Amino acid sequence: MSRINKALSLRPQPNSAPIRTAMVLAAGLGKRMRPLTVTRPKPLVEVAGKPLLDHVFDRLRSAGIGRAVVNVHYLADALEAHVRRRFADMEILVSDERSELLETGGGVTHALPLIADERFLVVNSDNYWVDGPVDAIHLLASRWDEAQMDALLLVVPLARANCHRGQGDFHMDALGHLTRRKPGRVAPFVYTGVQLVSRRLFKDAPGGAYSMNLLWNRAIAAGRAYGIVHQGLWFDVGTPGAIPETEAMLTGG
Image (cartoon, rainbow, N blue to C red; front, side, top):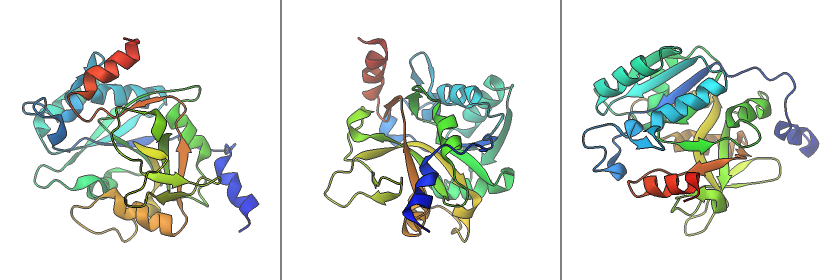
């Protein structure tokens, strides 16, 4: 296929269907957020006046997503009770990982029987982002190209990755193709924890616990992993110290 045709995947798709289902990854142990996570799961740690998980669901609601699959493991009863109590206006399905923590890739694979859609959103529950001129979830939906993509990742420039201490995750070419950061080097884009994926991505996926990185690497090798740049604010709220730093930036303090 020509470079011109491939470039179409970066342009808005006029007949793009809305995203109906989101997989919310909420089963992690939250070790980096201790001691705040000794008695509560990380998604229920509060930032800017409400739990991180509630901020995620606010974004899902504003994008018109009516169904969410949430995986649970650490302090699962508290997390399950929270989502069923606070988000009664959405269809909530719980993917139970109480017996075994399955990591990101394994968690989504385990939940696939609960997801009817051919493409769906996957969101880390400890994200904090503010939409820019275009809603981030709508942006992903409008750029999705079924013929070209198995994964479309929302990324943010390293220079705008607030509270982030890493060296970046990906390089991205003019057509949106992603490649990995080389060891010991810096990459210009950071993964935000928000992605739109096809069920094709999970074809022949391993059983048990494994990382999404395995599937991304496979999609990158096939030229089917793409990125799109988030147009608003994003914060890496991974440690207790990042919470006041994030809140200060949000209030201009």
